[in-house]
Length: 234
Image (cartoon, rainbow, N blue to C red):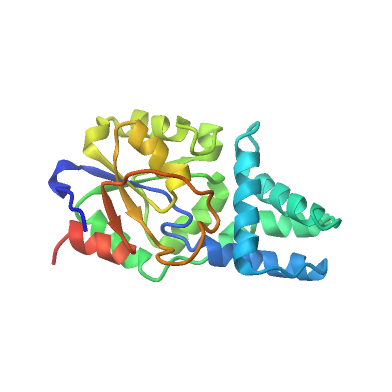
């Protein structure tokens, strides 16, 4: 395992979904009812990979709220099978973020890290949906940058740039922590940030709910508990 000198950093910034919140479980739970109602039966891996493709396409276009991105993904996925979701199904799926669970180690790890560092989040989400996730995580982040505020979705750099403006420190003093190579690490490294890859998927095949990408994080850990133990030794 590669090592970082954590004394080099004053602030840790995080991706939320996939890193702190178990979005693949949340997504699969949210997909279950509408897909079954329309007679669609597909393996979990295929559902997540289709989600990744459609979400990236929609987020690369003109800005729309994340709940509308999710609704667009559901519509596109059912359209592939000649089906169309109801307005209620679109609304329920779009708001499902509030129900997505936190990973079991996220709450304790964030509390431990917050004892040493200031913490920020740069998330592809709406303000209100992220607020529900923040409550699940049991922490008040020092800085919150959402796609709704940036009017762009990662991997677009605008969210990172907005975070730099608000934090007021050079990138060398900020360590970015994320699961998605595609959404986070490629852009963060290009902007001069050191990064930690929380490789939640481990040996699972494919790239799940994120498109595949290549990046070189400075540190790879399997979970948040490992990062917290390294950064804030007992």
